[in-house]
Image 1: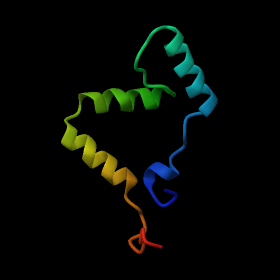
Image 2: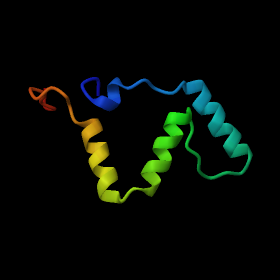
Image 3: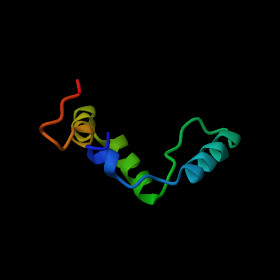
Length: 73
């Protein structure tokens, strides 16, 4: 994953995400988008997008940037 856009992105603080998840659990929520404002905005945008568009975004984010990459290595 180090050679992908998603692997190179700055990640939300794991402790903050865990805290938000526990807060939601204790509040009886069955689903949240944890993290910072940018993550929440992405979650909302993806919620509204058609499945084909979401699949394309995820494909581009997970595609290795190196064309020489071979997953069999």
